[in-house]
Amino acid sequence: MRRLASYFGFLASMIALGTLGGCADPRNRQEVTGEIRLNGRPLDDGIIQFAPLDGQTTGDGAQIVNGKYRIPKDKGLSPGRYKVTIYAGDGRSGAGDASPDPPKGGGKAGKERIPAKYNEKSEIVKEVTQGGPNQFDFDIP
Image 1 (tube, one colour):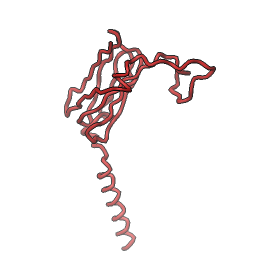
Image 2 (cartoon, one colour):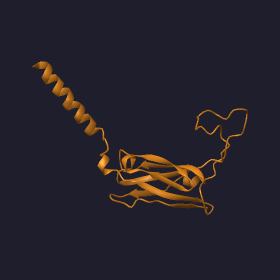
Image 3 (cartoon, one colour):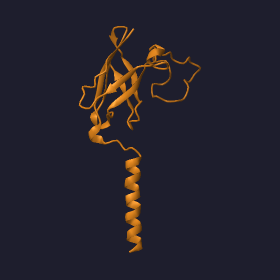
């Protein structure tokens, strides 16, 4: 009987811990989409990231391909405000495998094409809302 009580106590503790740990309700996630233009043209390749500002347990990013990005609902963001950062190197940073290792052969590191006010110094804040639409487009000069 003690063993059964211990098991149920452990199970209840784990459920409480999961609830307090802020596991995001998958039904509350929202799809996020958009288009990114650089100098008037669709950005060929890059990354957009959404960092939570209101204590949400979701924060995510997406690859930008041919000017478009999408975070699907099942991996989406909970409603709230997010800091947005956008990155797009010039393709000279390495082997193209997203490796954290420096380029081989003494090549120069790539240069970021996106101005710092859209990434390192970003103050861009977007709000994801319940039921959307959560489409955030950016036209970067």
